[in-house]
Image (cartoon, rainbow, N blue to C red; front, side):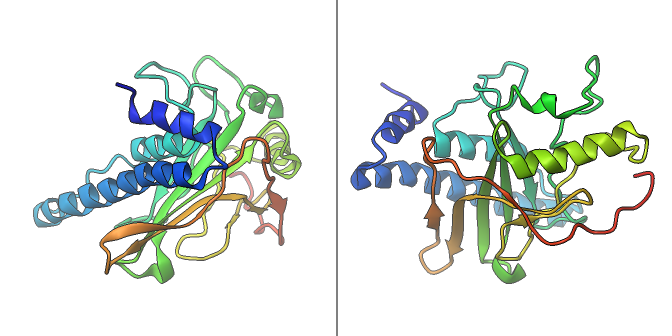
Amino acid sequence: MCSPLHFVKVLLLYSDNNTIMDLQQKHVITILNTHRKSFFEAKEFADSAGHTVPCDTKSWSQILVSFLTGIPGLYRQKGNDLADGSDVKAANAWDAIDKPRFNGVLKAGRIGIEHTDITSLNDMPFIFFVLWDWVDGKQDCERCRVWYVNTLKDNDFRKVAKNWYDLRNSGEIKSVNFQLHPPIHNDNNVVTNECGNLDLPLMLNAVWDKNKKSYAIKKYEWNIKNIKYSKLTGSAPKRRRNT
């Protein structure tokens, strides 16, 4: 019996068939619904005990991306998040104390490895960004959006990355954590950083329908033969010194 992910990989080979794509999206909706259910069931216990919600946003996001793209994980082995070398960055605004960010987007300062320029991106086909937030910041209107960057060919993303590496190499930036600030509770696709703001290509937009008690997919666009690229937009926030 084939696994659900193997089934998805087969479906993606025939993405022009609407009926087959509907079946693939049912898997995605089930994952979204299961994640939401587990989070808010756990929240009741966490609230009564005075603790934060025990939800592994990173793992849920990795699973979701695998089913969206057909790219599996490493089956409990160490390494990148996905088998092709891609990474998944996740942020969850539900019940968050601090403002969530996409952390560690660029490799820098990892134990035993020193990454000093954008060549660190050359063995990573994609970075996927998964944000769990609310539409207009209203609870019971949960939303999940997924964006991606083709790190090898996305020129504007590489410009921002180079700017950060250059500032870090000069000592002007001390941090090893390159962060992107997601558009939490906003409808745009812009992530911000002091080295540049980027309008990212949107892969998935799914919103909770409280009447149907299920997520509804508003947009799903993924075609490995027709990859889109991010665009520099607006002016980056004024950078603080030595950060």
